[in-house]
Image (tube, rainbow, N blue to C red; front, side, top):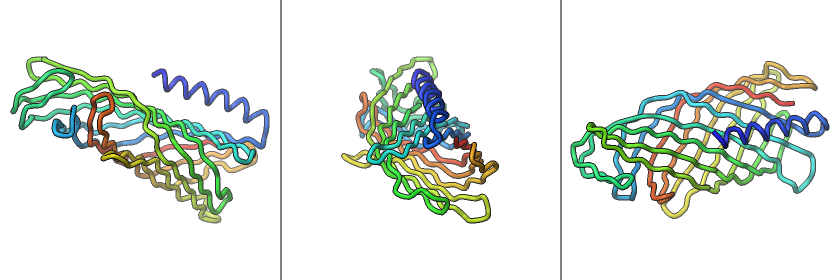
Length: 250
């Protein structure tokens, strides 16, 4: 919640700056993402259990601030929530949060995750036909996991950490249609860890004038979190599904 309030405060500050100078650009966007979660988690590479998670509608929003000053990067702040619940009947002994669960026990889990991405990026191309950006992202991950068995014996774990990632984004304009094809990705892979967040979609311009642009978006997004030892947390989780959203550009 604190991270979401921080991102909203930065958006308000940026809005004031954008209104003060027409050379500055402010983008505010959001989406509703209907995703399916799958995979495993635990406290070790050999101590993970696969859970069946419920499908959920998740929220995400971002603000981006662009300027014409060379060498100084633009900034984008994005917030995403990944909350779900699930359960499984474990096939072998499973340890989590300092407690052990016996084989064949039925476990329920609450998995509340959110992250805020702080991205610094540069524009290589920026015109109506092609936009291409690249940069670096610091993903601030904050996760709470609770595991409960049938007799209400439970354990939980708080996980937080910074994940450095590369960032790329492109938009291809389709002349005289109001349509754009866009793709965006944050990713990293090292030391048996792979984390990526990629989306591809289509946007349509509802408004396009000197004062404000307003686009609606539709696409597909996938998030992979193969994590080794962040606060004793290990996971191999995937979230994917279609999203719908909107972007305002001042």
